[in-house]
Amino acid sequence: MIKLFSALCAVGILSCNTAVTQSSNINNEFRIYSNGLIYDDTTMHQLSHIVDSLNLQFKRCDLTRQYYAVSQGIGHFISIKKGNSKAALADLELQMPFTDFIKKYKSASVTENMLIIKSRYKNNYENRWFTQFDGQMMKDYDDPEIRIEDNSGEYNRPLKGQWIINDRASGYLEAFYITTEFVSPPIPLKYARMILYADCVVDTTAEIFSVEAGRDDRFSRHTNEKDYRKTKLFAFTDFLDKQTSHISEKNVPAVYGAYKWLALDSLKKAWVKQELSGTEKFKTLLVAAVQEFREKKLITNDTFEECVGNYFSKKDALAMKRNRRVIGNCSMDQSPRYHALNIAMLSAETVNWEVFLRAHLDIMNDRFERITDGSYAWGRRNTYIKELEELNIDVQDLLLGISLRMENPVSKHYYGSIGRLGRALAETRNSPEMEARLLNAIKDNQLDTYNRLLLHYLYLNYTWYLSERKERLTCLDKLEEADKTLPEIVKGRIKIERKNFEDKK
Image 1 (cartoon, helix red, strand yellow):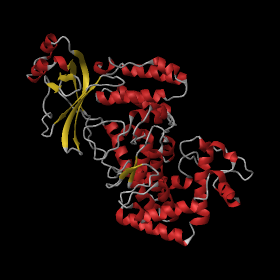
Image 2 (cartoon, helix red, strand yellow):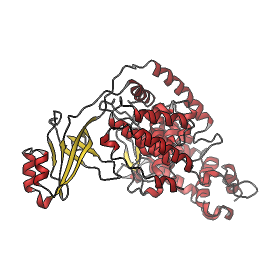
Image 3 (spheres, rainbow, N blue to C red):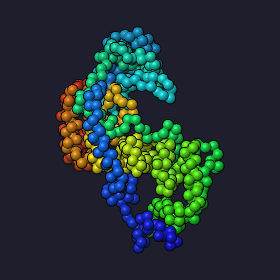
């Protein structure tokens, strides 16, 4: 029991006078180091040298690359209940003029003059091409969209005066009537430079996960080997389980209260470090399991990977984590975020910037798979923009560069989530400058309508996450003035519920 108690003290679970260490880390999402960041000083120092090189590299980039806005046009949207739609579908297929159609079918629901975005993409799972039309009605949900299989690229042609029809929608016949040609105007140079900076900093040749990566939860003992019990991986984890089986919550002093589970986990790790990691059997079994992974690419688990990183090779531990996509089981399951943080930390420690930044940006954007995800769980998932600012990244250019949308991105360009980036910007140390840049971009009629609209939402999300009521309302005043400069097709649809911003706690 003395060794167990000493182990708890050694890892900071208890202070040696038996009082519980009331660290703020208990209530934080991730461990916070003495520097106030989720990465320690050594890691930050290693990363800062890489960023300095990248900033120099950006100055040597081809700054003349031209980007084009996503294809956008204007049109109307109609929907008719399918029970009344057979004749209507025939008329639409014959391309009946819009005015004639709405006169004939008075039961049709009609929305006129909206911005419509056109995009073409390949569904790799189905090996088919699709063209999708998205109407921008500025609603919280249910904006109209029509997706059409388009392997030949048929819809890459003039569409003014044409109907785009979807008769497969559940219960409704839906169609867009296009009133202007779709255009992809060039993105002005000052915004193109932001995109270029993002592509310079976020390596566009990199991926976080390997091609053969499996999907699993964080601690699962499942693997892609049929007879798991015959693997070297099982031999090691079984040995570890048996050697720590004598440690249970009853060994954890009662003063730890509701956090006994946390103490138990740390206690077992401390026991492995102090009593087990130096033994020949531990080393032999660990080396054999690592060699097996190198040969067979078995799907591993968090406990094993941590042992590999601590007692054998951080490079191998990173390869194992990149071989496994962690899926969240529910809204409160933070496993995907912890997995991404572990990948980021191992990437930093092995000087793998390409993977580090993508993993950190995934944490910032909360870009993870979950079986369910209720909004009540979002609040605790922080953005960690401070870590990027401390590395001397041009955070404003980076975040704007991954917010803008374009027709011709480079392969694997990183796109950010407008909602999450707004929250991150509310935590930036240069808020006044950021506000001014966003407002000026919203008012810039040289920038395409769709990107101006996206930046409106970015600013709106930024405003929502400001802590002070007075600041929020002042920002709303500025945004409403900027919105007056937007084209009527979007300006007339924007509705800001000021009361929600006033009442937010």
